[in-house]
Length: 69
Image (tube, rainbow, N blue to C red):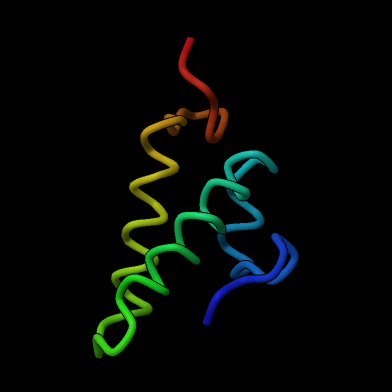
């Protein structure tokens, strides 16, 4: 199901990502969810696509998810 706000994202996403990365995740998920309507793997695919979008702007370090310098 699409997420109306970052507060509706899965707890694991909210805990691990900074606010801007959550925005990226939510927007990518919602777009992918709409694009994959009717696909039985719609939700799983949307989560994978959303993580991919985050990984294009952020990298995971020992400090957490950060914008690369």
